[in-house]
Length: 176
Image (cartoon, rainbow, N blue to C red; front, side, top):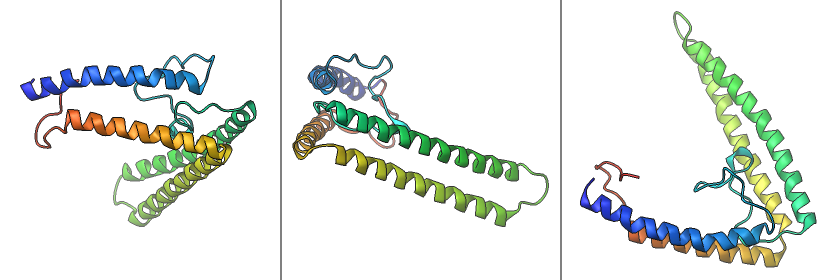
């Protein structure tokens, strides 16, 4: 480990701990009385389609809003599950075609990859539609609070980047 990499690691650990200590009360405020999910970690606990949590820490939802969010996520999960099954079937067809003996059916492969691309576009549109529905659940005050919290989080990320710097592109990545 180079001295610069060691410095980054030692500089990062106290900053990461501080960010964790700052974020803990915000997370506790978001869902009072509820323990954190057992597997939630540095990467968070993601929802359907690997979407990030719907709202930043500190946003307290009413029971009616929680019910709306639950319904939105349940529907999104069902929709994404169907999309993923279609995508898996397409990829299986592509894999089968590529492993076939003899000449490739390039027109079939082109059609299958076009269908795969269309499914990816549909997934992106579905994620945006879900995010729009989640946006509409919040009151204007909650949206302002969410925006302020997200701005603070962005600022903390910028501060971390300023302290950590970026590793050289041609060198090995820093040790964890």
